[in-house]
Length: 347
Image (tube, rainbow, N blue to C red; front, top):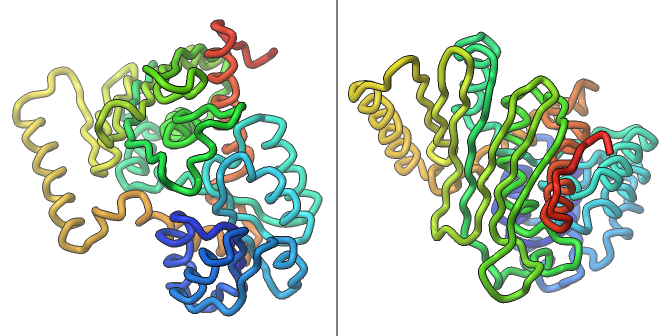
């Protein structure tokens, strides 16, 4: 299978290319970027034969089977649609889109082009989240009542992709790091239909429209809810939370890939076991080096699953329909902040 990469930034360099280049029977045939020097440097590093300053030229190559889109969020729709209609399978960096209309356009283009579509919501591939999902499905904590989560990150204003922060329609940190937390919540709650969304947010100086922190309340149609705290101002880097059920509680430390199941009281022994497991995983990850890659360690598994879905004509690991729900939360949260009101999904 031949791969094309659009975007020669950090995601391509640190995640997509290392994963693709480690697979047998997979060849990265070209890299496209408007910055020729960036594309050239990356191509030399990974032994990629061709570079393009216009990705349309890469779409004309009939030998390329799959395009991996590693560009800023607001460029995803046009590129994804054109790739799909050119007959290329599409892997898109998160978020797939920031509006429902854009998400719909991408999904429809994939159907019209007869290609597979997959979105890099790679945090849900952490073993702890798979374990949490399994516990929920097996009734370990009963029915979900609420999910409380927070995602704190450092915002880099020096990167080439930082333009998304200050564009007119940007949801800021909500659409960037926040989309991982949104996807986790939707995934754990089995993508239940959403009734309404209410959000607050903004920043503490500088550009008035720049959203660097937000609190989002999601009300689901089945009566459950979620409260999300998303920030690029907290001075920490962490993604964690609690899932409260009718019969128990799950404590999730996603970044450190650790989970604690709590019933009745959390005793000091329970806390000791949780801490021991956390330290054990961190130590093993530090020795192997995987800990310092964080969620980027999940790219290889995701890409292998996606390629397998293409070869066997099965469901991709993370679908466009799932990513559309994330886009809907992003769009609704931004509207809620701007209009200072609750947004009902039916509207």
